[in-house]
Amino acid sequence: MKLSATLMRSAIVAALGGLLFGFDTAVISGTTEWLKREFLLTDFMLGFTVSSALIGTILGSIGVGKPADSMGRRGVLYVLAVLFFVSAIGCGFAWNWGMFIAFRFIGGLAVGGASVVSPLYIAEISPARYRGRLVAITQFNIVLGILLAYLSNYVIGSLDLGASECRWMFGVMAVPAAAFFFLLFGTPQSPRWLVAKGRVEEARNVLAMCGADSGNLEEELQDIQSSLDIRHHTLSEPFYQAKYLRPILLAVAIAAFNQLSGINALIYYTAYIFRMAGYGATDALLQSVVIGFTNLVFTIAAMTVIDHFGRRKLMLVGSVGYILSLSAAAFSFYTGTGGKMLLASLIVFIASHAFGQGAVIWVFIGEVFPNRVRARGQALGSFTHWVMAALISWTFPMIAAQSGGHAFAFYAVCCVGQLLWVIFVMPETKGISLEKIQQEMGIE
Image (cartoon, rainbow, N blue to C red):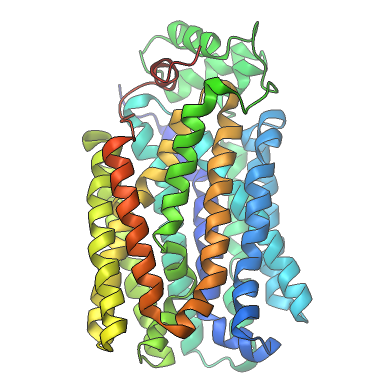
């Protein structure tokens, strides 16, 4: 079956939510020193300021499931684009610390929502043989957004704009947010959501444009209707039931391990970490670009093989890379070697993340839940991810103030736990239709 132009275009547009997610997440990494000076922040308050967006992200991720079921996946993406735009403009013009926190919180709501709805939408419009690669476009755009944030920070930091410099770093996100909003007008609704709403003819048209797993539209529609089983289930049925326990535990585990690796400590505090190791301010921003570029390259590599090698093999490779690189980073701080050894270890760490967890997490969470609860399942996985991200990003400055080695050693131990989970618990989902995965999970 050939990859349709409509499917590819719709996946790329939806994944722009991921680009804004990545940009919003990383842009603050170049502004931490400015924030401390501008608002007279302690290490504790800096941690809170950085994690304030994550409070919004947590609420956005857990709260977006029901709107995604009622308004549709595309309808929610419109709202998220507006929130990203408002946050960018607001942070750029924030006149005091309280307003900055408020607009970062709004951006967090958008990030949380995008982390749920962008991969959810792509998973539901994609045939099984392309699903891993297409959902991974979201992760590609996340890391592209991170790289663009680092590049933007570096370029703006080199322009010597004075007091307004960091305000420009936040404000530039308004441009891709506006583009995202207008591009959504050319995307169709999710066929699985349309079937759940009884709009079967519209769903048939979307499947005809995007492609079906079997190549037979009527067979595909029948499978979707059977998986929804609308006579016995609704989109509003209770989510926390024994029959959904396995996918719930799988989603919570992969999301928690994602953050216990320390990935968001690196993303939020990249320049801060390099300054701790002795780099100058401009050099620290440049090293951030190196980290972002590595992230992008290895994400592309993972996208090319995720549907061939599967999810578990990528997670195995990434877990081993995590353990080795985090151990080396901890060693560099404990011995005071820092410099090139720290840069090398963090490059291996970000490469391991991009090739493993980064490429797999949103694909996997979107696959393990049945159609009728997928939006809420994706929301739960994202909620877990962002709760852990908030804890990691808030505590990192305080732990790092004592010793950067302690933080990286703790993350390395957590990654040993992830490796054991992948080996003994994680199922493989590559090349299996969403409806067949539901059957393999034993969910009727």
